[in-house]
Amino acid sequence: MIVNQKIERMLQESPNRKQLEKMLRLYQPLLLKIEKIIAEKSQLIIGIDGHCTSGKTTLAELIHSFFESNIFHMDDFYKSHTQSNSSLEHASNIDFERLQTVVLIPLVNNQNIDYQAFDCKTQLLQPIIQKSSKSIGIIEGSYAMHPQISHIYDLKIFLKSSYIQQIRRVYRRNGYKELKMFIIKWIPNERKYIKHFHIEKLSNYVFKSLH
Image (cartoon, helix red, strand yellow):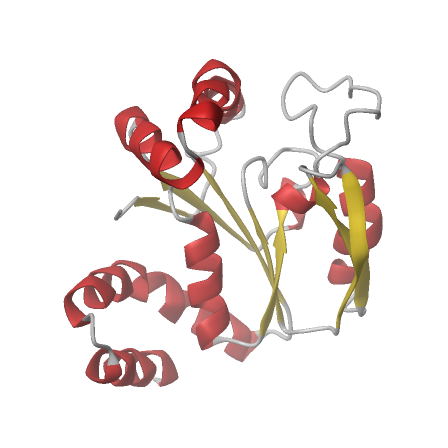
């Protein structure tokens, strides 16, 4: 199998073999499943959700390194401060309408995709990103498996971290000032959403964070 061959090659060539091997062995069954699916059908859409800092983007990039794919980040579809709040009880900060219009509908229809990522710092949409149609589309990030969009996925993946792990990683990644907002708002909101919609239970694969 191509996946197994590539894993062995990557391990042989990596200067950090121990750390890479741990990650590759964890995700090997998932990679083999993806390989099997795309051998049988022309298109696969994957959703990766989970706790913040649990490695969602890292997993999306790992899948991308094995298969021809496009990655779309939920962070690129946040609402600006000037947009009206959604009536959704959870994930009201996500512009699902824009996500569906510019990414999900073309993705489902195997079309090329042109979209603009939202920059939270500037509160502006960035220049247009153009992506040609690929056999695999990956939507990754918090709220990726919200019921508004979860029906499109062929595979649903959930990554979990303990609360303590999240605090440590957010502090390392974002610093003390942003950590406070994560503790007060983002982490509690995210965990309420996961519990309310049973995101972990409805996933095809659940992995505990490695880092």
